[in-house]
Image (cartoon, rainbow, N blue to C red; front, side):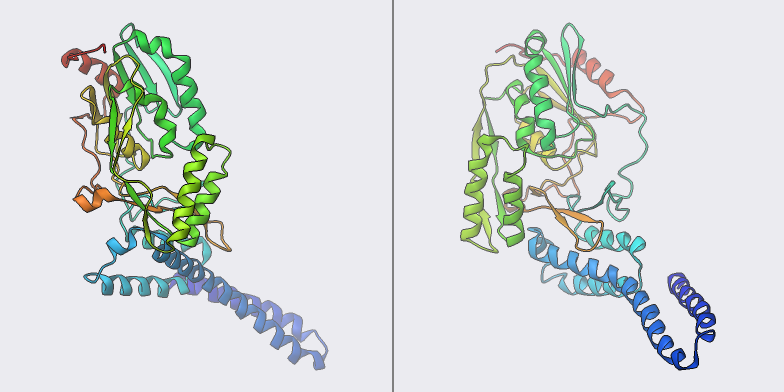
Length: 388
């Protein structure tokens, strides 16, 4: 009601001011001016009122068409509920101005309970209070904002990986190569991925040889081959951060998607990734929190296969079931949405983690220094083997 009142007040204020101007005009011009002025005033308000609805309708159409989790989350059992939910939001959007529209867009995205579906503006993510309302609580422990390497003592090293975004790959690769000698001299390794919401799998590839694995068993995924998703894959291939050796693989994916439009296409079978295991095998602790998601959870699934790895901290986010995120702009707005393009076949085996997350082997309290806790844990749980 307040929004309607504010709009009405602005309209009447404009009409009042314009009345003064019309009364001072020649008689033959008064009628023409009134018709033009009222049409402009009310059409301007209508445009403001409908802009949010346009944004919402685009978002609804985009998700229903391109999101690979839509068919899993809107089924015959809840289709009517979804229908009425959508209509209620559309009705609300009709009278919502642009500054308040993000709340409605986020409310729609939250219906799917997938942390991957995120609304952004120029400054970053637009907080979605409908999804994970208690996730970003204040923390007492320090979380370093960058990627770096540090030797903590003669026997312990720390590799901090703040993000797996594509732009972080050169930094991660450089850190591992530069500190190769130091890594070979220690038997205890802490990998800190707290706050790492994911990115690209190739970004964490340089650390894989240090996990004590000869191979990693992967469950494949299927991609939804819509026109929008195909175009997003093409843009990814053209990214300046994309390693050249990855481009033929992406082109193959694009060709397969084009051959089966609007279908779920199996781009990768379940497979074993063999690791060039010529590095020192460490006793490893990976620090995780409930801001770890997406590709970071993919990394954790791989790391958990090593007998040398212990996960410490708290549950991860639980947003790995649908991945390979792509950015899509919302027309005529300052917003864009990140949407998953693929669906893990782990779901077919009942292994989904949406809204559940990956459970740590050891839980840690928020009011402690987790790095110190990890160093102390090494003294309690001595590794069975530290050399190959």
